[in-house]
Image (cartoon, rainbow over all chains, first blue to last red; front, side):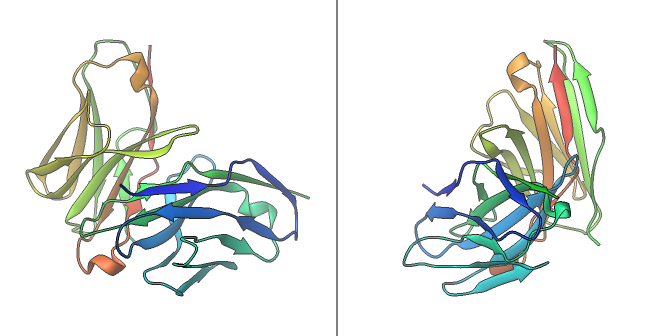
Length: 112
Length: 115
């Protein structure tokens, strides 16, 4: 079946540091890949997505590239801000259904 | 903007009570989903529905049921609440069109505590 593995958190960074959150997946066929973000006290919001190999999703300074050869979709940002503190979830949608499979989430804490 | 609303942000119930969690979306979406979110486990799909009166089991349906009588509303029902159902419950919807661009939109969540 489908599965998503994310790096364990929490990740603590100083403002303006470089961020990488690793995500690898297992799926049959050609899944679509997503990053969702959950700010404190809120539901999940779509951050970015990629639907085919070598696609790069980007939004709000975050980027992730769909790497089929390494089955990865790592999230990166060049300079994090305190307002980026949140929990980040990697997810995939495989096959013909609309269901998503989520990773366990990675908490990011950015300090001044 | 897509809006997904959930009836309560916080709920406290007693063991054995019947609990209803309501979710409403305003974008005429075909698909609706119920997840629970637990620390270290991420989000796990309980049930989903791809049309009115249609439902399918997700990964952890035991102890839950759902109802979708109208397109915009999807209810999660705990027939007899138990302490291991204490969790954050998240509802989501998606259009169901063009699968490769379909995006799920989430509500703010209901934090349920069963005592």
